[in-house]
Length: 249
Image 1 (spheres, rainbow, N blue to C red):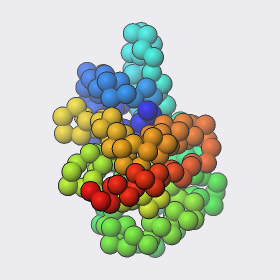
Image 2: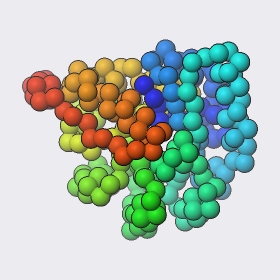
Image 3: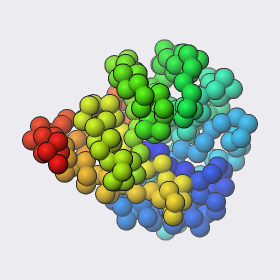
Image 4: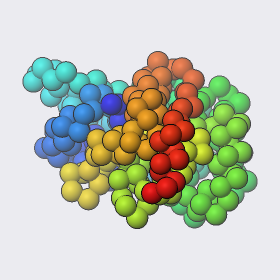
């Protein structure tokens, strides 16, 4: 698997607090079956506008190379949608995902104004490919699911957090989003090794059991690889027999 949303670069945002925790997160991810990542520190002027992201990222590259770990790392950002940050994208101050045309964008949890939608489509019209981070968090999509359906039809991609699938309280909603064809990527959004760890394996197995291996591969493996290769993402195929057995349960 490839984790396309994780805060593992040390000392740059609210993720890993030091290199030791970063390395522990890396080891945990490997044990979960992950062999590649796009690291996505927050970009949110003025709170997270770090000039040392590349230097801190290099510490992890050096660790992997020194210890001869077979693991693939790429650099990106999770970019909060604001006027300052949209300007920074166009000035190439924020990182795309793995040096592709993909941007991982974060919306406010409880507000969705015309500005936010206009900003997304403005970037899209400038040939960026847009992925909305942790879509399960946004009140607008929970209250008005037709809005995420509309954005999906218009070429905007959606990332779901693995823990939302794993958690029994939210699993039904998570699987319904996948079944309805609204999700293109599952990622951990890992921040540490305790409260928000980079867990992926159980989420993969739940999706596989519910909708078939092809669906799980698309969400956890193939579409992440397509981001790195700057290719359009695929809609996961849902196995009907699996889908109906889910409804019975």
